[in-house]
Image (cartoon, rainbow, N blue to C red; front, side):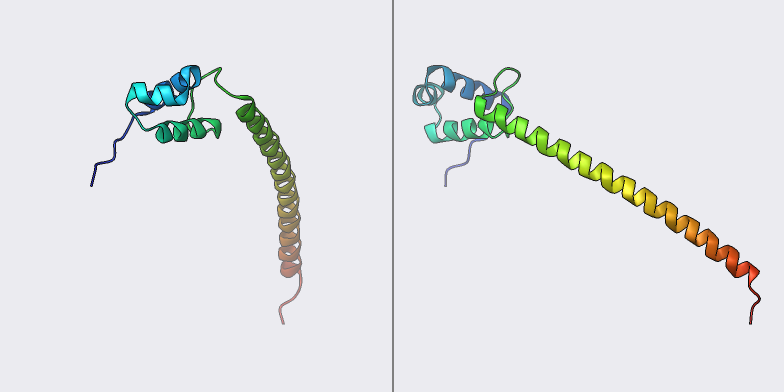
Length: 110
């Protein structure tokens, strides 16, 4: 069984950049790697799993980043509302606990 080659991140980044410049088939041949491997790295870069550095986002990844940002901001708003509600409930429970503790001290034990 052939041993699987492991490439470092910098090699992958440079290979994808080269593939985008001169074509993936030609870049794969020049680098001595399988073209499917290079396509896989390109797909990973498009999905945001392989960071190619600043200024390399495609319109598809830029849109997905915008959508992700909107989703995260919505989650943040929802969590802020939940935190506020939990603080109010905690305050109510603290007041109720103090009330019942004080009424228990005042009432005679039977």
